[in-house]
Length: 589
Image (spheres, rainbow, N blue to C red):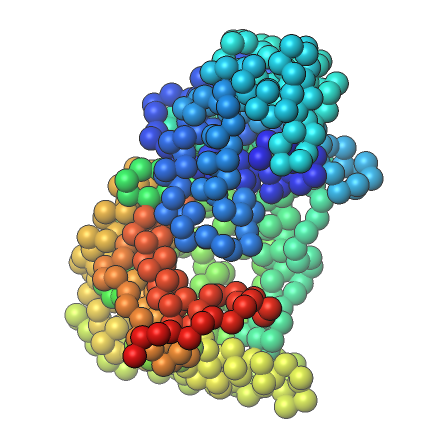
């Protein structure tokens, strides 16, 4: 586990972190950090090796037998802990002192890394790996890979794939303050409670960050025809993010932690003080109330983002400027994006479709835009519809039938529209576009919408679903909608107290859709636990840092594992081996 670093760094680091996983969180950083060079380019720390394996068992059971980094987590942990002389409850640290040279030829080998390994008996540890403990630097073997070990003190061994690196390493103490300065307030919060921690020096990896990737210039989503939209603004925005991280980035922190409720992944990017990026992420928002203005329903996804923080408003203004004035798509999407400066926040719920997601993912979708000028945004939608009433986009034709004040709910009148799209018959992607629209909207020739201006904001649905629209208007007015559900409230206790944005994957609805698909495919009934909590992703900003937390409840792992076992029992192994010996027929009658 620690020795394969030269051959495959990504898998080795992933294996160490995931195997080390999560243990009982403590309110201070792992003590081993005090001995790690404070200027190291990359550091990976695990607080308690043995307790780690216990907390990752729900994930390990789910991934059992899958060809993923780390392979069988439980067996890897057990094998490592079986080495004589290992301190099962000690902390382990991986150290990359310098980032790899981006101009160097890629040989497929990893940069040399060192590991601080906790031991109760250094001699037993070295001898257990085939080495001579009397040697100043011992040659050892792990999984047939050669490595080198050296005693740092009575409780710590230094291990690495390069003899010179192990021999030349200088033991240090008093490095905790250096890491506290590097991590900043947001990163230090993660270090305080994380069970496994990855610390990356952004400037050390500046050249790697600067390498371009993704879309460039003006682009449209392939296969979506006139719905593809102009992605030039998005592309430029992503480029700016990459450039800002390379120019202004200080430290990236990744933390893994766990408790009786589930597993958490924390990501923090801290920017250098006084830089433009640090100013953008100086102040947090509050997305907590926005979900309550969405209608309660079973959902595939729900989320909210607060736009009130000055840094967020600046980012929206930059995105708006990059987008330009080109009218790219029908349906009012451009009208909304061009009026983002009027929005204080946004919330969306993609409700579950009883007919299944393939019959229209967005059929039961409702959105809420918090704004003091809801009527102005509604007028922008109407103007956009008038402009798109009968137009050509390339050889495709778009017709928008927009009706104002078609009905009323809770004292609020709302509009309804139908957008019909006739793709270019000579376009080879036209069939794909129709199939995509059928999947997204339940209609291969377009989509429908409803919209209303309330006192608190603009309410929209992605279909002409009057009951949904009525519930959406009521939730927008009363703030007693989706965010007040117990499943949302319970998972919020695992998220930062103040959040700029939060999104939830509806595990119950998604697992039910998977269940239906399996049953249709196999013709066998699958059982799914009831009331599976959602997976949550939250983001916050403070002190020149942006933070994300992903939380996966243990109940989600358990439900997925239960479904996997049922599938295997019905259909055999998920990945059957063709040349496996035939099973003997059952003697049961």
